[in-house]
Image 1: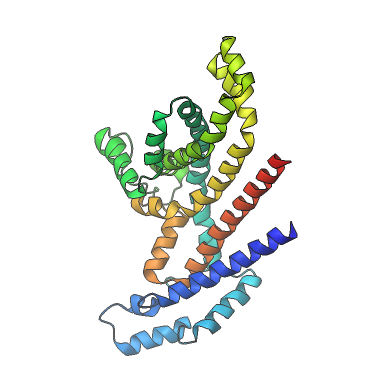
Image 2: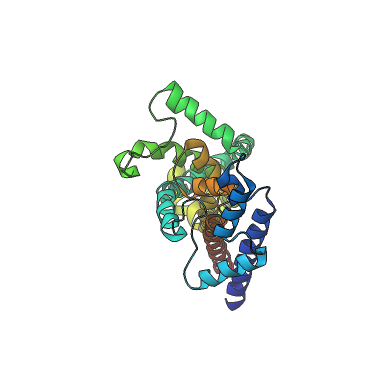
Length: 299
């Protein structure tokens, strides 16, 4: 356990260091973007001094680390607001789509695995769907449910001064866009164990005795694949949050992913660092949980 936690801390350190260095290598910095293309060089220089960008990268990184150890995530280069409250607000918004998407993905993934385990032809379709680019999937969902049926808004903008609870329909497309490929991935992951259990003598015997497929799935199959399903679900819990950037940006949903995309465009390094830290921490916790589940199942 101690070794796993040590690796997790080292991984987090590597992630935040790598993200900082990669951001520093991007063309232009926050001062140049805030000042605009036609800005006077003296204005850009003044902004760099004001934001502390005139210091060496390692000095800025160490200052950010020092603040992190004191619970301070810094201030945004763009609006000067503390990063912590903005991060918490966006994290809560992302949780409103990630948690339902995770539940839907786990349930649908298990059901699809039970189906394709009996019909091998469906495996290719599931594999193709799991590899579908998010841009294509989101565009298809918008065309189907917003343009075609007119049942859902094409963008997931929240009411001004309100929350998602005031307009729950804006959550549907982001949830589907996250859940559908995740369900396909989980179905592919657990199809092998499900197929193995379906071929065992006690399951074959149950079929011969006329037990219904639903009863066989609940009483004989699911208990024997609980370990792989739980491991896959733990991995999905981390990957879903980390994968919200494209979906939230395309649908204009104000969550953590959209915050990251906006921060990268404006070179808002404190925000980028904070989002990367949260995403990496969630993924690491999920991976540790998956490893623990796998070890417990192997005993």
